[in-house]
Length: 234
View 1 (cartoon, rainbow, N blue to C red):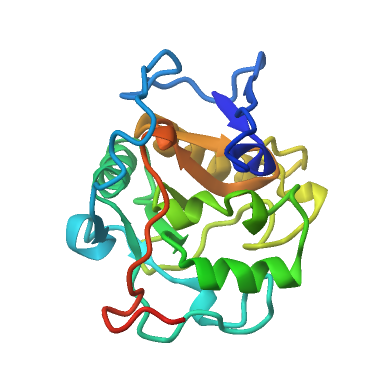
View 2: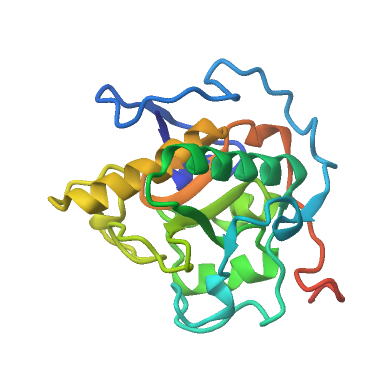
């Protein structure tokens, strides 16, 4: 499994640090292996789509429409849509299909955030201007504004979150990708989530167990549309 550090992804002059984990947490195949050749910006115009229309079994719970996030207040409007690039939506559907085959408890993928408008990312940066955890807007911002990454967890058939190392947007050592706690249920749930996402073609991020990035992210670029389907905020 490969891990990347969020602050290393963008500014776009900075090379991505890909870390090979010698102690393999999960064993799975990927449609987007480490050797995949990516032409930068070749998919820049691939459309953003509503995830619910492509992968209806995936649960959507946008945390930035609530105060349960880093900012401790709602950033998105209540009618915000969960948008991602077309191919990313198809990969998330693939992740759910993998869970259908490999989860004995009927676990479902739940998405806490997908595409993020630049104006929303700026609000988060004001709360935590730290490149360790957020993409610096002056250096290109976040890959969330490209529509190529998601914040995800697992839930049961009723939509209730499965036990994970921390809650969403918790900035602490406990939120790192490799779980070092002693709870077997938490370890199994996190391993299941990482198995589904890496199988579908995503990388995990060093400091946030919930954050996953499409392996071919360099083929894309930033996009600015309306998160509600109405006018784009200034």
